Length: 202
Image (tube, rainbow, N blue to C red; front, side):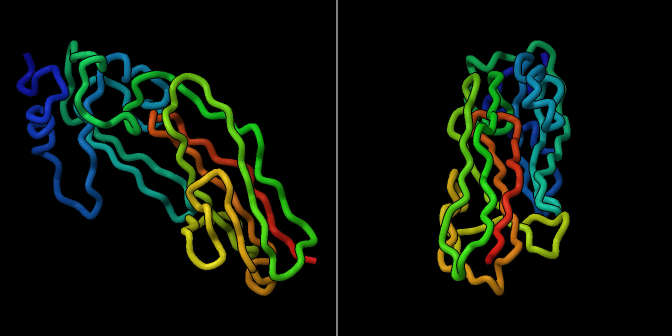
């Protein structure tokens, strides 16, 4: 039997995390069983075998989500997720699921200034994705790669919902802006990103 046991108990989690060095980003220590290790959702995050993993995400300078996974302890015959106690489904999905964008945000052309309106995305799901989570991003007219997360300040509301609303957005600032949304879920589905939709004024 492994020194770390074959269950996802808090005691075993503490043991597995002893070797994690302190840094500016605090990783999550995640238990992965045989079934979870085979799911594309988890392999996409770099988690490809049973055991204890150190995991975190970050957003690169272009606004893309990146994953950092490191296996801390390999386990043979770990306990199944039917007996799990850790709340880690957003990282190590238990079952296969997927999110498909069925309605992309639509471009706005000939907008009057100041502009008030919305960008909306619609989705369909398979499996058991849990609750969907959204993060809208913008790109200025002069940018070609960098995407920036939007927060509910200034002209923006709904930055973490399916519908982003702009209120009284002035042409001098927002003409040529592009908007997109990143969608994840509490069930650990693979991230999907919408097409970009531009805002141009008359």
